[in-house]
Amino acid sequence: MNKSLITNLIAIVLVIAGFLSPVYADVLLSIGLFALSGAITNWLAIHMLFERVPLLYGSGVIPNQFEDFKSGIKNIIMLQFFTTDNIKRFIQSEEESAKKTLDLTPVLDAVDYDNIFQKLIDAINASSLGAMLKMVGGAEALEPLRQPVSEKMRAALQEIAQSERFQAAIHKSLSTEKLSADISVHIEKIVDARLNELTPDMVKNIIQHMIKKHLGWLVVWGGVFGGLIGLIASYI
Image 1: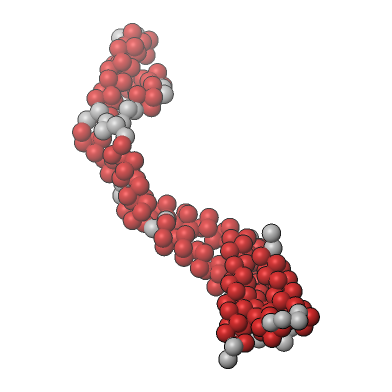
Image 2: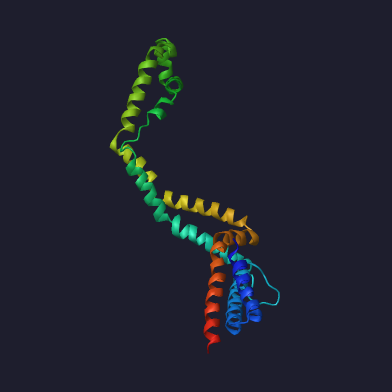
């Protein structure tokens, strides 16, 4: 239902009735003319928000102020939602809702302990102990130690990972001011990239889609109040 069109049609009908009616002609004509002027004036004002009208200075506000609207959209997003403080609070709330101790078992399971042991043997062979090692059978003599050494290394890493000091260091690195600032900068870059893709017509359509439905009531009330003024004027 087009509120503007219906309001203007009703006002026109009242004007016609004012010319044709045998009774209350002056009253109907006054109400119709004032209602029509109020409705048309408000409709034209709404139209001038979105479209440029020749010879009407100031029309096309939204297309003309395209860059200002883009800047305003960015400020709303960054200054109201993705502030550094908001991001920091989000990170802290996520930390508090998580387990106090981070489980690093999957990371420790992914470590190649055999490779570490082999690097250790290579280091011994390359050092002054290499000659002594050869005297007792070389690297093969250390092979029985591979499994127990790997288990000891894993147990040692597990103990370190579960220590309060290590856990505190991880949580601190996750909740630093720098992390919040880095996330904010990254979000700002994403917002800038998206806004740079916008055209004046796209911004106009976005705003028009949001508010045009409700702006139609301005035309309706312009016609209503114009008609009331016309009714009063007919008796003055």
